[in-house]
Image 1 (cartoon, one colour):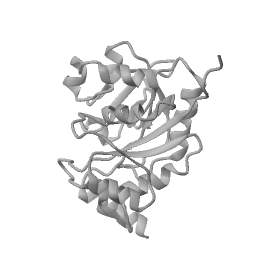
Image 2: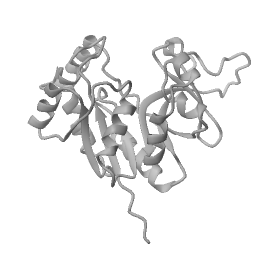
Image 3: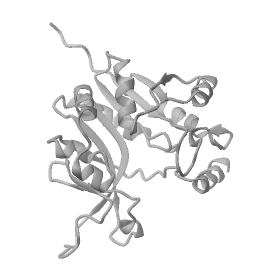
Image 4: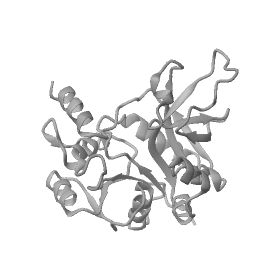
Length: 248
């Protein structure tokens, strides 16, 4: 029997109840709601078989449908975007891989999304993939706990993620590199369902980073390096800055 061809589902989680920025997906930026900027960028991708916005809020659903986007309604009790993506994946049984795309990165590199999708398809044994961009040793964000860092082995797989500076530069050689983790994830379908079925792990709870659950359960996470350092929108102040940039 021939196996079904690989298909990649792009999921953009969008929720209303952000502590720092309620209603963020619908915040207007340069004449469009934030989530539409993300949607329009993702439409440029070549390797996504289908794209949907995952939300539990009728206001977001109506706005997405109004600009011609596709919506998948989900339960309101998901603890993370990954859990929301897994519920969406259940509704698309033909999709072999899922890319969970941050709903607050309106300038996300579409080439990066396509790279994650193509690498997943090309390597059937690869369960999970993400991305990171290099940081300079002098970069002030290295000490910022809101900026997640990742260490990578010689095969390009994640060793650890942390809000702390890793590795600690006790005897740092001149060629030591630091990497900022970008919050985009790709999953092989079966691994996504395994992931959300596991209990939150010790290191995950300690750092507040759900990807550590995969590592603690023996999962392998490939890290694609990228020069894309496009900013996310976490606060109204950041939205105002982006509005100015896109309105010029």
